[in-house]
Image (cartoon, rainbow, N blue to C red; front, top):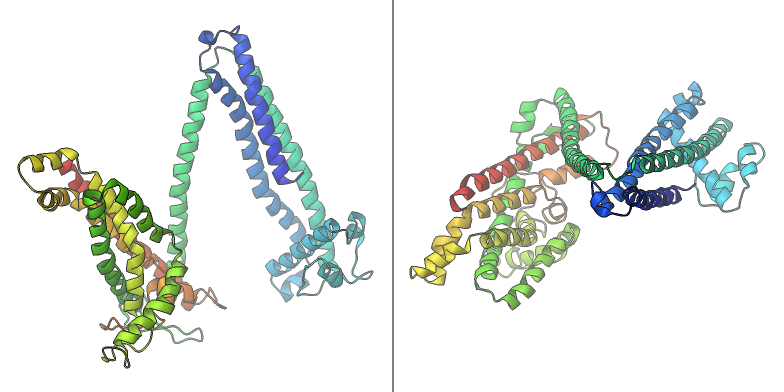
Length: 489
């Protein structure tokens, strides 16, 4: 039974449990709803959840365990000689590819199920047979791999049927249990609310555990990097020159400098424009103008960053060269190419405008109306009220929004890759090409990187450093908001 059809079957059984439990609750109360402990819907949801929770748990466990068991069984069929020629993982990858190709051939009618089970390397050309259904094999199909693939198919098919039987039995068992325990005195509401609370707690824990998993993965690889490369050279080195052949200099300071430089230019663009737009929209714009302008401004937030990167590469960069290049309008010769800190900073600032304006607008609107009325009642003008009352009251939240925008700018990648260049240097000239931490993380993990070398592991150290910087900014932003917001509540 296909997984989608199995899920549909589970939902049907859960729906049946909902109807039966609700009907049984009414029946046990003699049709008088006042005699029920909970509302009728709770009894129905009790039945549905009693089916869904154990069934989905059993299904998830099976989906997690079955591939491990099958791979362990099949890998035992691989001889030591075959594993020695290439890694066991590569051999198992070929086995799975052959097995998937045989399944596809059976589905397309190229082979029957019996032919696929009896196939051997001497009776036919396996590569040609699987190539006919679009499965290309790079390595030679040996008799050992073919036998392992056939065993893999058989074990997987058996597992699918066992999974179907188990899941249906659990679903029907849940249906029987929910129907049997449902009566007018059953505390269905308590059960349903506890289940919903458990789901909410699980969602919160999942987010936390994901963060913890990311942190630990960075920490372990960072520790391994520092066991191969001196920490003082990494944090205080002025040269970034990785070489997978050896003799690398991996100083992070040029990357940190470029990251902060580009972020500063981006904030210099985004903060004034975004803040002024927020003040206008919240304090001066008519409802009609606000209803049109605010969505149009926030469209910028929905544009993919790769599009911003292309805009920087193809439009903003050449435009700046036409102005600040050797043959530009000013003729100053400051800019030699389209990729530069200024190019990436300007485009990143445009990207951050809706981020700053939307947060600032919400914060300004959260200032109590009584403060506005009091200021106007004392004779202040509208502009004086905005400058001397509303903005000081909203300032902590605005500072928090700016710091969050800064952390967003520090973590940006695609605009930097396409707009800022790839040179790691320390320079004060904003028209020079530089590169950032995020861009180097991408470059160090692409290509044929050997993850046992410091040149590849340095990406994790870069990521850990960036994580600490952005985490510090976020914590500081939350501290500012929480510390000063109480004064205006």
